Length: 133
Image 1: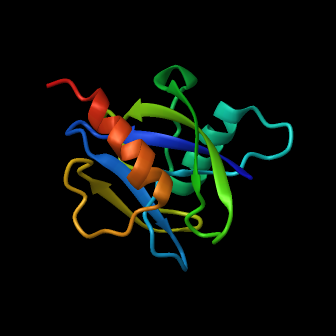
Image 2: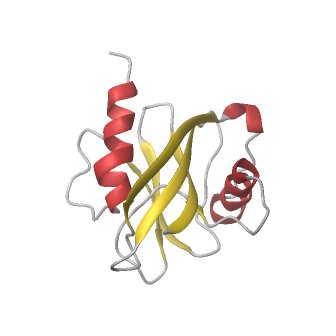
């Protein structure tokens, strides 16, 4: 089981901030693997700084839980993801480090974009269920 942390980031319009790593096709939530002994939320904050240039305070995050799915880029492996949500205010994320591309995706209508299993099957539906109508 591959252990990761991930952020369900949304902008002011309710769009999900998704990333695609170099050499891969599926878009996914930003995040990554924690270092040994690293606090999980601190690992996520580090990944967001490295991948998107975002330095969000810990109190901006809401813990959503631990979710499992098939791994997007390691065929035959499963993923266990500790996930937090946060809404961006006036921050402007910029793709950096191993991120080839960043997009804002409407969780209700993602279009024909390739999505990681965790994003497609768990996190985007969760985001939709949390929307206030």
